[in-house]
Amino acid sequence: MEWETLKIEGEGPILQLVLNRPEKLNAISNQMLKDIVDASFYLDSLPDCRSVILRGEGRSFSAGADLSEGITHGGSSGQMMARSKMGARAVDALTEVNAITIAALHGHVIGGAACLAMACDFRIGATSTQVSIRESSLGISLSWHSIPNVVHLVGPTRAKEMIYFGEFYSAEKMLEYGFLEEVVDAKMLLETAEKLAAKVVAQPPLPLTLSKSTINAVVKAMDRAICNLDEAGVTFTGKSHDSGLAREALATGESPLWRNE
Image (cartoon, helix red, strand yellow):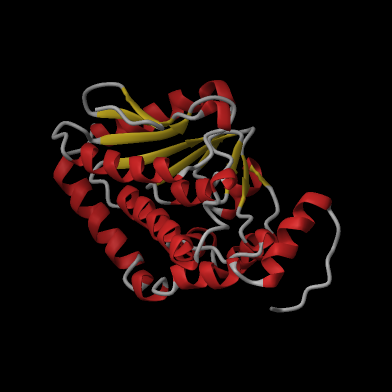
């Protein structure tokens, strides 16, 4: 199988799902979201696939949503809602992959990229990793069914901190917060992820698959209800006057006078 923005590497029980737009720092386009959904279903069709390592080609895991496409802003309300829904589908599809998933992170992990990483079962970061959830700084609410994932990983207070302020967090800080399971030198990142994948493969498959499904069901029991208004929320905030001010402020570094409208 081939996709425009992704590639699958490896064979046998351990595969790599690679974000493959290195010239764009693997910015998440509409096409990439569609490809992630398709690739997730494809991985589930492979009976021998036991573990999947999600990584980014090039200098960074991903710089987040491709703003040049208007993936977070622009277009009609219907188009904005559709984009948000596609992001949620990609995150959900990745979450529900039968194989045990490991995100191998390096460089920038911004916005939607953090959402994809949080959809995986484990996250390992290189020392270069910088995580930022910047949606509020862009004047929009975090969607893609991902606010509960932030809370599940780092707890409510730190989730508020990360979402409210959109700051960049080092790999060490993300390890302290519980976002990452391990931090290693960049040269050891893929090897460390492969060792964890090999540990997965050494276990009987059925108990792991059923346990993953059950644990996800327990943790996410209320997530769908909580995220019911994700698409409406990002559309409402993205169309607000203050959202335009936020984008200008991000470019100029100035602090605008917010109008709460």
